[in-house]
Image (cartoon, rainbow, N blue to C red):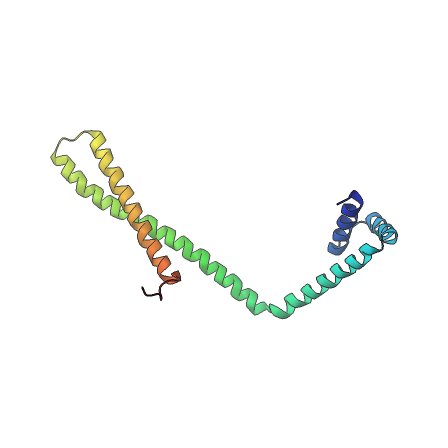
Length: 150
């Protein structure tokens, strides 16, 4: 693309968006006079902008927009809920298992490394368990091969 073509297209887009200055409007008019093929392109873009603006109003009444924002809010709310439920489950189950193993470890005089290793094993296992259960629950709804029989 030449510099002239690039300049004309830039000026046309500014014109369409209503962001051009009077000097840029004059420059665009001069360039369109010199290169009339771009006048058809500008007219096509103006028509496209007009039709898409009308289509948006016809296709998406205010009720649809309200429904869209409500669904978006619900998805965000559910995502945060899943995060908090997963985190709470991990903390509570890990704490319970830790307390159980702590009682076992206290009965013996195990080194700190063994205690830390057991704690890491418990927390990692709980996180993995919660992650797998959550993934299976989500995939159950969206499994496209659910109806396929072998």
